[in-house]
Length: 351
Image (cartoon, rainbow, N blue to C red; front, side):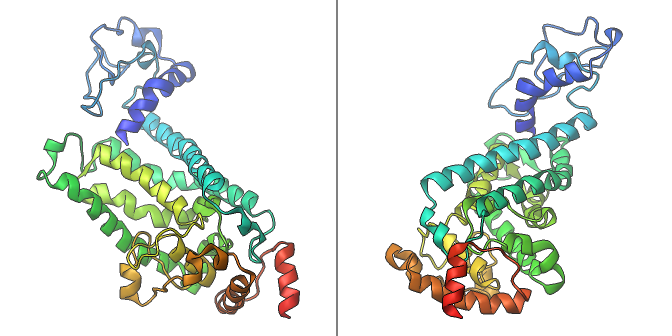
């Protein structure tokens, strides 16, 4: 995260902090040396160079980097900056990824599914927008720990424990996080936790890409903990860290987009995750089906989902609804969702 923070400091935060929290004249006089690097502290008697966040580039600081009473390495500034990045930049990434999927991938015929909620997209966006700033509060301590050097992040490939580790870190990250997210997710389905913490995400029986981040904030944070713990336990390249961060956001949208590309017995793709939203107690995994198979919670997606003519057929939807309603009553009791007109018409037909 120090790479991301340095970018934001250079192009945005230096000027904001210099304006909001200017250094005293005595504190900053004569310090704007021509020998400054991108991470000099602004409040020392002489500029003390701090290594750049990466060897890939060197960002020259503007004059604003030396004009705030909160220098870049001030822990309160780092905490506030990382909170804003986690919240606002996270919201931007969410909207970009979900909107691209919604426009170019998501099948809008899904709007007529009987279990599609009234004003669902608006409700999903509202839930995500409310949750993300709260989730950021719990996430920031991990990022501050990374920026201040407590994690095992490394910069150059030569700094890896051994060269092949630069490749192995990717599957290791997937395996580690997939294992722990499976058990955290399954735990959130315990009756004592489900209705309070996890039901807000299961409000979406037929999710759209905007449901990807529409969690209760503690639910979303709990399932993200393995991602944040990984670089404190295992070495992780800084660039790989950024790549994996982007991948996680894209993957989270991908498994909610309703486009069932991969009929795989190994990959826990959108079809598997649709089974989870429809029938609640199956397919808790994030990336693979391994731990669902081990834990007896794997459910193979229906073959009908991989053929558009049957995937969108009334017959398939009615079959889904009948089974879903049976499971839903066992898990939740009375259904308090507000479905659209199509759902009401089908309900009358079934009764």
